[in-house]
Length: 317
Image 1 (cartoon, rainbow, N blue to C red):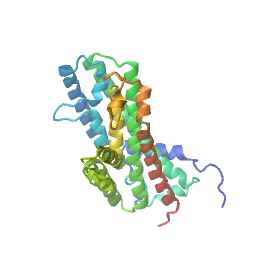
Image 2: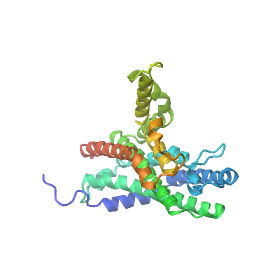
Image 3: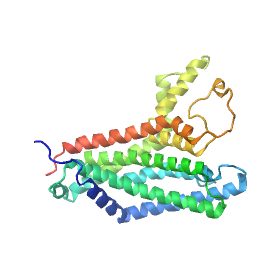
Image 4: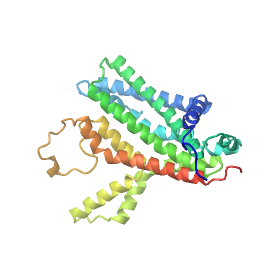
């Protein structure tokens, strides 16, 4: 039967309803309170560290994101660790929760297509994460101005906003993953465990697994420099399967203007370069553009898988 009208009609209504449900739920309040407290603690520790050691640094505002003080990690490290949990918490029961409450058939009884339901649920989650990230960014900017007395420059703002956009895309990967599990697995608890297992493997254990896989693919001969370089590049490629690795490289490149590469650098490539000289913001973005594209591709692939499965799913059960 030929469709009539746009398949995305009603997306805005579902997205706003999903966002409103998330923002008024006790689960979201607890998670965001945890993120807010840890982020504020990391920023305050970074400010104390900046005052003690790097008061002459020309990029003090960006140091707020990357400087750590024991025992707290940096703000960027906190985001890489906690945001997947926020995204998984928002998406693990988006679809199977409707089946559990027997409300999916009521939703689809309205004059909307299935496309709008899944798109709306994903966009609603992204809207909530975007609002939370913007709030954290404004909090950091305010604390930096109040406690350091130094407003950010235009370059600092451009780099931090690019980092904010990349962080939203990174969160979208985990939201799409949890949405895919929520579509494939009918039990919310099982889909949450599946998403958390993938997060644990890719974020915590992948750095230990990648060297073994790389050694099996491209073994290094200590007497052959070329094979050593090939083995290192293979290990780098395998480690980039993890979104956390890609996000870490993006954060390092965008928040440190002196960084010039995310891979191995040979002496020949440094010829004529001024060590420590900052790169323009656009050049830094171009260097990590493959990493950003990889995160976008992962998000689109995961959402497409969930979309195809949802379109073929029996909703009357």
